Image (cartoon, rainbow, N blue to C red; front, side, top):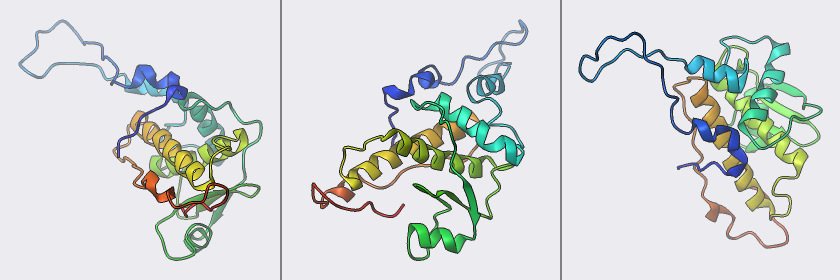
Length: 201
C-alpha cells in the first residue's frame, strides 16, 4: 500500500527525494559509476538527532524518539511521556488480539505502551521504530487526532499515519526493513455511525 504524507509532514517535504550528494574530487566519471560522498548520516542527525544511533541507553531512548517524532510529524513534543511496560509476547497477544498473533506492542490510553520484552529498541532500529509507532498513537490520543470520527474510522486513520511515520523513520535511519499498512478503509464500512469498536491492531 502506498503512503501519502499529509501537509502535516512539512519538515519532510525536502526529504521526499534522496538528498543530493556532493561529488568527491574532480576526477571524470567512468561510465555509470561515479565517486560521491554519502552524507545521509548528517541528514539523519539534522532531522532525527540521535534517534538513529547504533545504540541508545534506556534513559536516552524515549527522549530521542520524542525528538524524532517532533521532526517527523505535525505533533508537538508531549509534556509527559507514557510508561513503557515490557511484557511477555503472550500479554501483547491478549491486549491486541485476544488470540495468538504477531503484534509486538500496543498503546493503551491511561496505561502506557506495552512492548514485547524480546524487543531491544536500545540497539535494534526496527524495534525502535515499533516503539516510535506506539508513541505516535500516544501523541494522537493526547491531541485528540480524529476524535470526531467513528471509532473504526479513527483507528484506521491513526494506524495509517503511525505506519507512515514509522516507514519514514526506517528510511531516514538507513534501515533495510520497511513497513506497510495492509488494512483497507472498507474494514469500517459496516460500523454504525454512532457506535462501534476498532478492530484489533
